[in-house]
Image 1 (cartoon, rainbow, N blue to C red):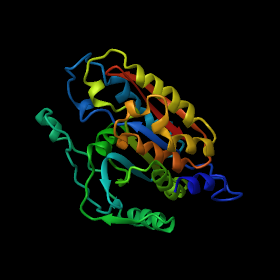
Image 2 (spheres, helix red, strand yellow):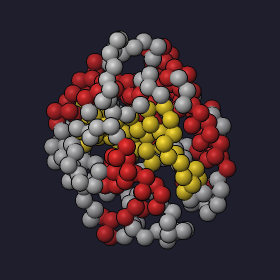
Image 3 (cartoon, rainbow, N blue to C red):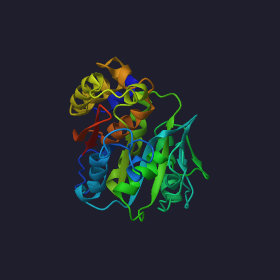
Length: 286
């Protein structure tokens, strides 16, 4: 699918039309487990402070208030692309060994069965097999960052899974298929971590050099024109320190969805921080 998808980026999806109020697509770091909501004891107490503060101000940077939020999290993979179809999604506390109060966190944003159905239709129309999951709730890659970004929990949220193939071009095609929703007030959010080598993160290194190498390449790639950007991101594993930064790519693939949803829009880095010795970044496609 990679060559076909990259070629398709050279064709305008909606010739002659512009949408002044279209929302961007975002790739954000969702932190580690529920760290924003607990005392951090494995290093400086303010380790996650800058990231939390940045997430909290995202809403104020948007040109319009989202009518709904579509999140692709690193923590849900399925055989075919699945979409949460319930109107009352529960929370999935898919982290282990944390303080008891972190299993009492609440995020009561409603789902949107109508939007979920439309997402499936857009994916299927683009040749991507998709289905509704009527029972699935929100994992911590969804509710943890959204509690920081939109704490009122009054905007409908729908989660879309990663595809089990972990194919970057397939995930860029997912983003391209759902891109029209940006023009209708849907904020598309890829939720992961731009550096996710857990053994190095837990090693106590003060400066993880391969994270700097990969961050430089990733930032350069996201800021390129859409066709070259797609080609480079689809070949991410050959990037400097690519496989070191992501021994397994599930935390990077939400970026592919956000970039695909960006279409011809410019990409730019909107956040950068050093966390647990690694450089971590966020990107926006306007």
